[in-house]
Amino acid sequence: MVNSLQTALLAVIASGFVLALPNSIPSLGLNSDPLLATTRIKRRGLTIDGRATQLTYENEAVVGIEAMEKWYGSNGLWNNEWWNSANVITMLADFQEFSPGQVSGYTSGVFPYTFNNAPSWGGFTGFINQYYDDELWWCLAWIKVFDVTGTQMYLDMASSIFEDAKKAWGTPTCGGLM
Image 1 (cartoon, helix red, strand yellow):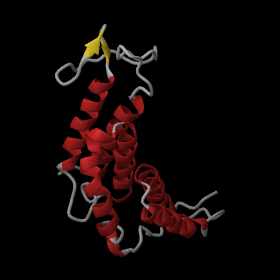
Image 2 (cartoon, rainbow, N blue to C red):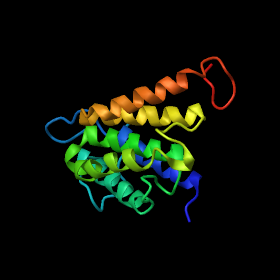
Image 3 (cartoon, rainbow, N blue to C red):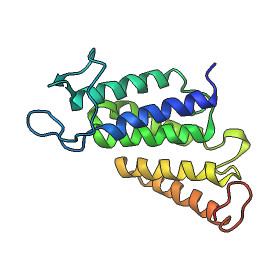
Image 4 (tube, helix red, strand yellow):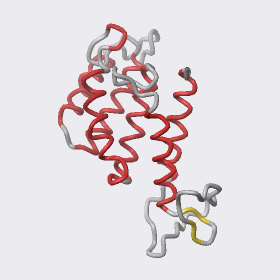
């Protein structure tokens, strides 16, 4: 069984792949960013002069997403983890924004399924669970999903979650907003 720390760690690793993806690739496929590390994993991608190409990063992100898929549950959460799953949704939306062809077939089912099945986790409704920091992870996730899909229901949910969290402004309890 995978614990919440492992789930969060895998989401961070997968997010790292997404964040490390080059923003622009010159015509030869090289990234001009000097901080981009050379690839150590050559089994799925290409390298040019020892540097990872966009395809390498895309393929490695897909490998991470495929590994996380094993923990996706019928409740729309990964390993039944609440706020961690919001981070996974955000990572998937980030990757879809960068490389829609690699993941949009998957996210076209995962986004609405999570949206419809996860909001009542733990007996709560609408992604509201009285822990505002948890709620705001979901708010960020649905904003990002709206950004990549243009589907209004995701932005409406993010707005609803934010309105609930906004009530805690200045209070220190339950992940209050200072």
